[in-house]
Length: 407
Image (tube, rainbow, N blue to C red; front, side, top):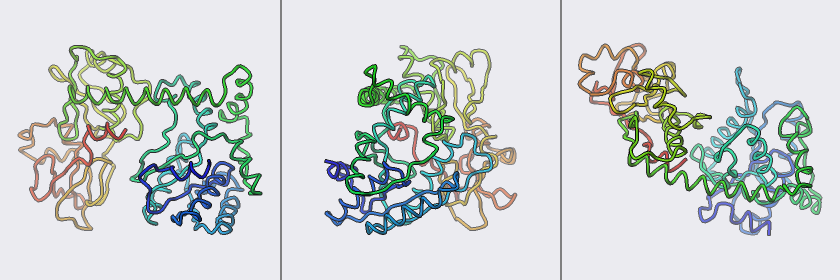
């Protein structure tokens, strides 16, 4: 049964080489052991990877313990070291995002097309209860996706329907050791409190399995809402280069939650944010823009115009952002032209005033200020969106419609 689960982890899109994310805990060690058995039977290549977050003194030894286990199983293994940013903010979220980014880079460098993660039904139940405590809606309470794409890599959670104790029993039968992270028993963490609460809830009939089924139903509801959000976007939202234009009032009115999702996803796309803004309410922008002409939120500038509002990338959010001309700038823009090592992409900014014909483009000044430009030091070489220097063009990597399909 468990071998069949890993066999179907990536459905019909089996990567040429599969990566296994292994922390050393029971869930990921069980995942590694199952994939090692499957690989030995099928001949399909796998590789394992461990991210050492260096947040505990023992983490380095634990990573090397995983390396020894991989060696005994005949599985290649790499250890990646995460460098904690000076200003980490939410440390858990920062570490998680850093872990995904590191593993994606490792995968791309090693011909790994997909990575398997060891999340279980218990993880899903714990996430559900933690998010319930944060007043989450459908999106927050919906079950974790068991297949998704991030950083250009496919990810799978083959064990999403298996219980944590079932996997530990599997390891015990095979005399395979694992490491229990002591932070899992630290009462300062919300997850620890929730984990201890689950057995008590089970006495009232609120079991991991029941939570799993509810979260799965919410995931299906989320998919239906996303479908209708895309329909309303096609009917009412217009993309103008990197901006999005919304009617101030949609007639006939659309359901409030669809409107909320539409605006939240628009702010996420324009603002190049990994997640939509939290606590976005239906009608909030139209109401606030009735009182004022402009508003900044989530890295975006929203400007009220006659009959509509325009969501623009906020210049202050990108004024210090730079990259080589052959890289994607601000996660959305790709430039084409005579690339050179001494050129950089930065926001056009106040240099828009150097372009006497910028008004003929028909785009607002804030739009052009936040648009990508080519610079050689402090000298402006090209501003493709503003029509300056025809040797260069700028395209959006994925338009808003494509973004909605993939999120």
